[in-house]
Amino acid sequence: MNKPELSKAGNNQQNVYELGIIVKIIQSIISTLDYEKILQIISDGMSELLGIESAAIYLLDNPEELLLSATTPPLGTDMPLYLRKAFLKDHPHIEEAVSERKPVFLPNTQTAKLSDAERKITEMRNLRSLLYLPFVQENTVLGILILGTCKESRKFSPKEIEFGQTLANQLSIAIQNSRFHTDLTNYKNNLEKIVAERTSELEAANEELKTINDELNERNNLVIKQKKEIEISLEALKAMQVKLIQSEKMASLGVLTAGIAHEINNPLNFMMGAYQGLNEFFKTNAPEHQQYVSVLLDGLKSGIERASAIVIGLNQFSRDNKTYNENCHINAIIDNCLVMLHHQFKNKIHIDKNYDKNNFTIKGNVGKLHQLFTNILLNSVQAIENHGNIQISTLRNADMVNITISDNGCGIEAANLPKVMDPFFTTKEPTKGTGLGLAIAYNIIKDHKGQIDINSIINKGTTVSINLPIFNKI
Amino acid sequence: MNKKKILYIDDEELNVKLFAHNFSRNFDVVTGLSGIDGLALLEKNPDIKVVISDMKMPYMHGLEFIAIASEKYREKKYFILTGFDITEEIQHALDSKLIVKYFSKPLNVKEIETAINEVLLYIQTF
Image (tube, rainbow over the protein chains, first blue to last red):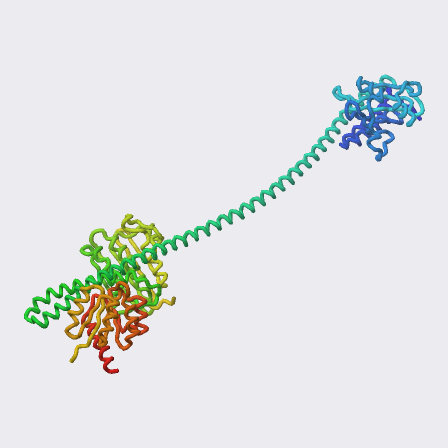
């Protein structure tokens, strides 16, 4: 085998040859970033440059461990990792080069003192002369290049050694760069992995949040539904309370008025009996005084009749009849209510009646209709502060009756108009109203399958229009 | 012509007095202050044709009295005169023909006289 020495100054052909090899090494290094490939290129290139058959690169994995990373001729790709590992202390020549950061030359393995590990390798690969070139980069040793001749020993000139070391140092930059690149790639891969992990974690968390959100939404809907149900029950309860108060009130009022009616009717009966007896007496026994006495007797009779009308009205008002098939004389019922309210408006309010001339009746509940018109009329009376008018008209159509009651009182504010039929809504003073009048009126109209419509202008007056069917089909 | 005998029962003494006063011109009026009185008077006066009773009275109210009386004296005619509005009980008595008519207080002498005369005519005819 040819032993090409490193070119001497002036040997241009040799220089070009060496330069060619260096350029080849550098180009190869530039063209790849693969760490292992770069090491292989360096190993092959350096052995070619120095004309040596065998080369090996060990990298320092850590301060005590070496990893066989490339050889010339190349390593088998299936060489297991544990066989590629070696301890620095088992290879004193490598250790020397590494610690001194300088090349070490071993001229002849057969005569040199070797460790067991060194001996094993040199014998296995039949190595004779060995040159150890550490890769030094900014005072740090990255690894070592070992060049070796097989079978024969050879000498390296100091210049060759120095050149080799300089080149090794330069190449260590490439090694370092590619190592950085590998680190960077690993780092990047690691980052991607972390990102992927984090992403999937976030997605999982997001999914969980979505589930929680859905649950919350569901619960929220449930709460909204329950709230609505409660509101509906509350409304129903309020309406029930009104009915209860109303029926309780009317029941006790009924007992009371029936008692009063009876107690008043008896003395009225005395008076009526006495009046009729006197009337008969004068007619029979003193016809000459008839004219004079009749004025007195008529006064007595009118008083008895008016008192009796009030008692009848009271009885009508508080009648405890549950059915809706009584014959109700609407005009007479309204008149009755006016009798009951007379003390509230006499000398203060002019009542203008415009009744339908036909003496019609509708099917309904006499007592409840009395309550209805009393409530509506009382509102009109209370709306008039000093003097005013109330107009009452009744009109029978084919199958409906319209009753319109209008006053020129204080009116209802537009904002309050939608609330007037709500239970307990009132703008009256505490002693004048409970806020139940129109709520009760509304219920009574509903029970008669009728309708109520209220129009009002503040300070002008209020008109209440009620429509009741003549035959309510209940 | 003989005055027909009628019975009036009311727990108010003044009512009884005035009733007798007003109706004596045309009828022979017997009066009592309770249902017990009424039953005793019916026993004593079999010629009573018509019975008029107040409703609200102690011990026995008007319809209770009439119910007992009519069991024994089916041919007599019974009326109620009351200060109360018509009640279910009175309506039922009208429907079952226990009483002929119901009058309300304050009384109307003419109305009651007319009704009595109508039933007397009916009794005489049949």
